[in-house]
Length: 121
Length: 185
Image (cartoon, rainbow over all chains, first blue to last red; front, top):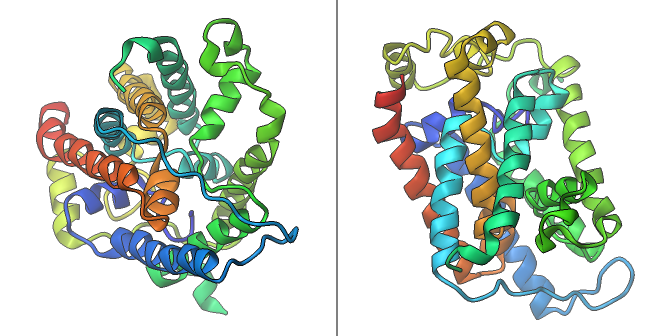
């Protein structure tokens, strides 16, 4: 994450400006390989390292929660320039300020837990 | 071996992400980072306030290990595998960012104007980072996943809900950068 600059605020800005292929290359190549991997596991019934059948749990069907939640997440992703993985990478890289983002994201998660019953899902 | 000290290209990083997902699937787990935020809330006692946080967090210990891995990876990447960390942005992007007041564009890893410890003396910066984090945490749980859970794991499994979520990520991100940034900076 750190070495590929996916944890850089600048790269996220550049991605949303469509001014570089870099982030699309990272996500796109991970996705293409991911699709091939998961489809192969399903087709060839590949077993886990423990020798058991691998189950994929489908995401619950809904429209509003994914769209609304997605938009809120996107607003935050662009502003803070970090999503929940790279946030922790930046801790290791020694950026003190990222703790503010992490603590706030914990508060955001907590707030969702409180309001869950009142939101359209 | 000098290439290892240079920024890693997308065709190295992307396949490595897919490999992480593959390894997690093979040990009967799934790749999703934002679930950890919920686990951390539970560890802090959020279960007393909302049922959403009432679950046995020890079942999620493996995912906290992934977080620890991300921290260690960031540490090694930054302190041992980098000679310079300036991000080589598109020159067009650098000009735009400078006009928004981000003079550090093209010379730093994160904008010093927002992330430098000195920048925390500004209430505005603290607010911006807090609001950004708050939206990320809230949105990720509302949407049931973040970049890893939806854009990588969900789309790899051809899930329509994940496609809707990723479209949402882009509606939100594009709105922030194109319409809200000019008002903020």
